[in-house]
Image (spheres, rainbow over the protein chains, first blue to last red):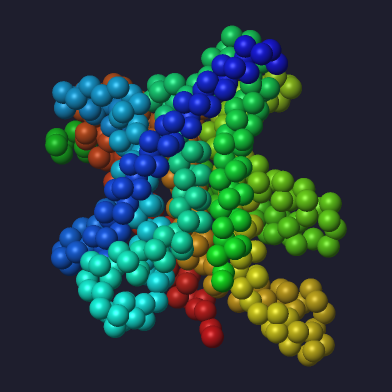
Amino acid sequence: MKLSVLSYMAWGAGVTVMLAFAVILLSSVLGMGLALTRLYAWPPLRLLAAGYALVSRGIPLLVLLIGCYFSLPYLGITLPVYAAAIVVMGFYFAAYMGEVFRGAIMAVPRTQWDAGRSVGFRGLQNFSVVILPQARRLCVAPFLNTALSVVKNTSLISAIGGWELVSAGREIGERTGELMPTYLGVAAGYYLICFPLARLATFVERNSHA
Amino acid sequence: MDIAFLLRILPALLEGLEITVALTAIALVGAAIGGFVVVAGRRSRFAAVRAVTIAYIDIMRNTPILAQIFILYFGLPEIGLYPEAFACGVIALVLQNSAYAGEIYRAGIESVKRTQTEAALSLGMMPRRALFDIVLPQALRRVLPVLGNQAVVILKDSSIASTISVNELTQSGKLLLDRSAAPYETFFMMAALYLAMAAIVLGVMKLVALRFPVRT
């Protein structure tokens, strides 16, 4: 493989990493909101959040990406493809992130709330000082696994015309005619991005059972 | 929202739905069986077999199914193999999800206490029989909900076969989106059909879980 090919792939991998980072950021913020809504909000809102999680986990991401890509122009909205993709994926993965955070908060024993109250913390303060730090530690491994899933799913952005690692591979493949080595290279690129995340997740999981 | 239009596109989408169901069903059975091969390899007494299996799981976990589908569909012809698009979709789904199913089975097996095996052996059962009659039934019951979620993942990932123009639900929806100037209706219908299928898969898994409850 020539050096120019490798650097082109590396550029694609860089775009993939940036897209994944943006999606992880957006979906974490939205997911935290969803988790808190489901746990503590006014009951009808809780139901709504649960419904959102159910619906967005039952529809394929590709369908959402294609649907929004085709629909938005009809609404008079012309977003750049990257922005549209990040928003759609952000909202899609918010449901998964929400489950990660909700699971972690619920995994903190109830007695911790009582203990917090007994030393004088109340409501929001109790939550942020006593519960949240413990939940944060519990959610690291599932968070990393979801992040890994985000990285892999950014590959679907190529299906609506966003340029990233798979698109870079397709262009190289079409130009050189060597599709097999090129797509193997693309897979290797994703592997290099995802492997550290997966390793870190296993490491954290193994060391969190105190 | 134009109801008459929704009804008009429904037949075209249902044709796609059939292929989605076929794709999902075959991949589901394949992955359920492949998972057993993976877990057997992962727990093999030969270190080499274990290492190969771990590498396999690692590769499947860390590469997107889209890349695998492209390797199969565009890459294999270069070495003289010409698999059909549908077959590529099935193979990619099975390869990826066997790894996940294997890890789910393993988690289930490891959650069954060692004392269960010891009790079975002390009653004079052979190790193989202890595994199949005592450990596995308990293990599988425990991981049924997780397997249900994985089944939904397979259903959703089957949409990726549209990228190599398998005429499943997403692809037929995409063609309708291209031809008609009614993106919401088509999109809404596609989403509704996927949701309905996901609900059916989860519902069936719930029934199975009721039939095989976890006993403590």
